[in-house]
Amino acid sequence: MRVTDAALKRGYTLEQIEHAVIHHIDEFHDQDDHSLAILVGPTQSGDLLEVGVVFAPDGITIETVVHVMPARPTFLRRLKKR
Image (cartoon, rainbow, N blue to C red; front, side):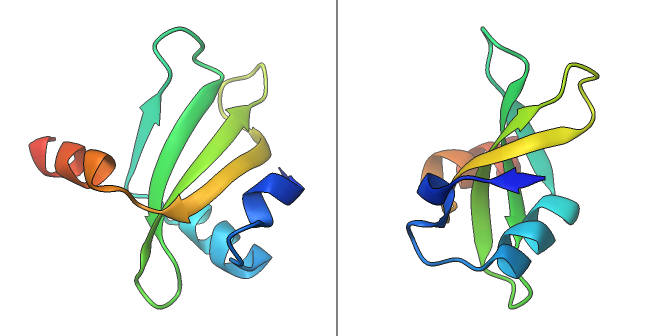
């Protein structure tokens, strides 16, 4: 899994990002492009991150992480509705 420089700009480590991806609790796919998704998952300390990913053509393998930041209320509210 490749992580872009843009995904690292908020100071999260590769370990924190990987943990959030592996242990994500929900994913939200782009309606127009199902290869793009936001995963919401915890760091080792339990902070929830939103991680923007690009899936490989198989739709399962994550090719690239393009975005990482603390999970915004928009995604946290959507978690509660599921």
